[in-house]
Length: 273
Ligand SMILES: NC(=O)c1ccc[n+]([C@@H]2O[C@H](COP(=O)([O-])OP(=O)(O)OC[C@H]3O[C@@H](n4cnc5c(N)ncnc54)[C@H](O)[C@@H]3O)[C@@H](O)[C@H]2O)c1
Image (cartoon, rainbow, N blue to C red; front, side, top):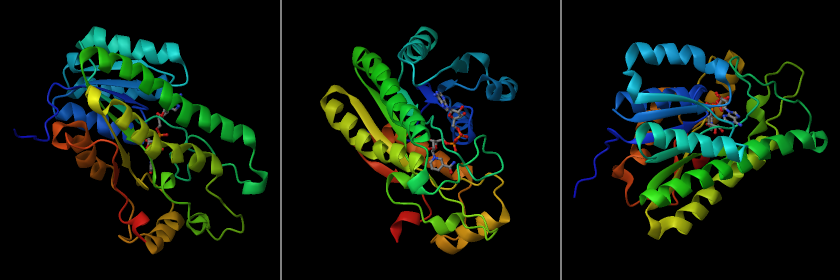
């Protein structure tokens, strides 16, 4: 039996769909003929995306869904609306997360506290979304996937799920010390082992679960950041968002049918040394 990279007519729900990666992947899935549910908490971000998609794709190929992954009711509704609209849920992409970023497009400012003074409330907030929210969304999807006889889950991890941040990446020589904070590292470290948990729990029940590890997607970062990055990265450059498309299509399709519990690293070699 052949296992092509083919997602035509697959029903895919992607969380955090209005963000940098979510939008890129949603558009790529639509171009490949998938039915896509774009789910996100930030409705305002979705407005422009909606008109872009309406101009390019047929209206019956996508659904915009308000979703808060920290709410069981909201996640259950997203799954129910997916099934009511498209008949099933083939693939869940757990992409939503909060992450205070250093790029100009980032919506949240990074808290500059050193580790020993980092506000625990910010840690609790990140755990609530990035860890607990991912579990809640996955539970709801698994109920539907079991009922329909199978499914596929793609979790979005980070290199900070695997290794500590090299804090010199965030030293821009401005006299102010910047740090990548613990909340993101703590909450994203959970993703690879959660992936293995779900994968082995459901391996005989037709649900696969794998993770993808993106790293440093270029989003109008400052010159200081890109120069620091170039020195530290084996490939010496940041990731173009389109370079994630192939790996996502691979995991979402039957081309990866014998993969479950695996972590696919797409990081320009960052974790290789
Ligand atoms: N951008 C990168 O360089 C990079 C690198 C490694 C990993 N990642 C991971 O990729 C994923 C997407 O990151 P991104 O860069 O596109 O971030 P982003 O901030 O652009 O997008 C995240 C989206 O998640 C949504 N969201 C936040 N809380 C939510 C909630 N409670 N319920 C539903 N949606 C919610 C936001 O509204 C936003 O649209 C994240 O899991 C992130 O950890 C990103």
